[in-house]
Amino acid sequence: MLAAVQVISEAADDIVVERRFDMTADGDVVPGIVWTPADALGPTPVVLISHGATQHKRVANVLALARRFAGDLGFTAVAIDAPGHGDRVTDVAASDARRAQLARRIAAGPGGGSVMNMSADDTRRWVEHLGQGVKEWRATIDMLESEGLVRDGLIGYWGVSMGTMIGLPLLASEPRVKAAVLGLAGLPVEPGPLEAAARDVTAPVLFVFQWDDELVARDAGLRLFDALGSADKTMHVHPGGHLGIPLHERLDYVAFFKRHLGA
Amino acid sequence: MLAAVQVISEAADDIVVERRFDMTADGDVVPGIVWTPADALGPTPVVLISHGATQHKRVANVLALARRFAGDLGFTAVAIDAPGHGDRVTDVAASDARRAQLARRIAAGPGGGSVMNMSADDTRRWVEHLGQGVKEWRATIDMLESEGLVRDGLIGYWGVSMGTMIGLPLLASEPRVKAAVLGLAGLPVEPGPLEAAARDVTAPVLFVFQWDDELVARDAGLRLFDALGSADKTMHVHPGGHLGIPLHERLDYVAFFKRHLGA
Image (cartoon, rainbow over all chains, first blue to last red; front, side):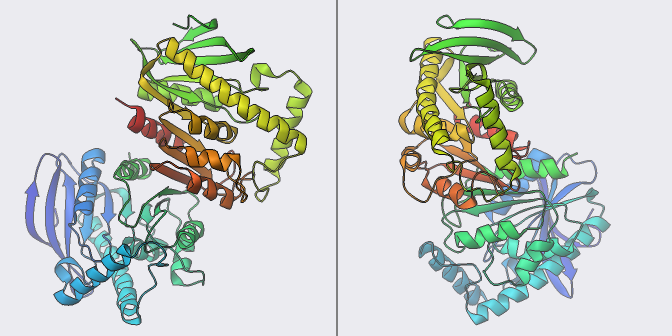
């Protein structure tokens, strides 16, 4: 298992076996983690977990999801550091500044508009992240398939906020992803590449949205849900801000992936 | 069990015992059904199921929900015929005409505005139904409590469309209802009694909404979700029309009532 990538470390408990790996994609080293169910005897359905901006492959929420997917569903979960995130941070001060900026925008309360409401410099870096992020997830899927980790092509994607900005172009162009949880993101009024990507999505989507999101206006979120091309789509809305998705929503992710990727 | 009401019939299978009863409320005879889990040894949490306009206490959807609540959760379920519905229809031709009118409005497609978009005559009958419906659910709760059917005061309410129009004033004034599934309804722009009732609701609510509802405009539905006073509220939105809530949403009702009324 994981023959073509460098396994950095391995740890196991009753629920999951966690393997830290380094993968080469497009010349870059991409650090990732694979969580396989402790009792897996062969390939399983796989869920890709795509963390948010300023986060990394092993933040508490990613870890909790991976354990749920492995423990509740018997699925494999995979996370990678997005470009410029986690172990790929090269300028720590700039990374800290971006995290502080995001925290300030959240503290400022709702009304900030959309996640696209950024400086020109941030926008350039952002678009770069998205395109590279899509390529790296595609490379990850290639790796998972060549390693024989995927049962019957059953691959799901979980990614909100930046995970959705990467997820939309990924889903639009990658038929190997069969179902996705997206959310905490929106579309501007003017048509653009993200809207085009959303319209090209056909896989079933569970879209989670926060009614008082400090980074995404309600209208922008509803426009994104509306634009999604999937015939089978659901939106789950809760009161509260960008960081406030209720924990019980994790049970809904599990139910969603069970319905679409379960045996 | 059911000492104070007249039991009309009883039937049982592996999952539920179904008892048809007649109850007197405010001088009227109100026909209802209680479904208790076949293996119940005492009181259980109870879910009140409030059918939609032109339906009755034993339409397929009500029956399916009652069996889910009893079978999956071990809860008791109760349905009554709303005023002028089911066994309480006195003018069959008028009832048939209302059913045909509703079918025509659904067939005409989205854009019909809100469910309040009705003739003066229909509006009068409607308001009458709502007030009387609230009184009769209150009498039903009294009956369930005096019969000793309710465990620890755990009472939930499931009602969409007309079930929500009756449910809002019920929930606003009845602290004995601890959690509710509502939906397929909206609020007009102008403030009114339904909006006031929505603001007075404090119990947790799962609000289900159809993105292409022929009877309720999107804005009206979002306004109702927004107005709900509950700190713990969730909206589940699906594409499709008034009659198109996906069947898998029933699992979400089960999870919701389990979370709020479960042991």
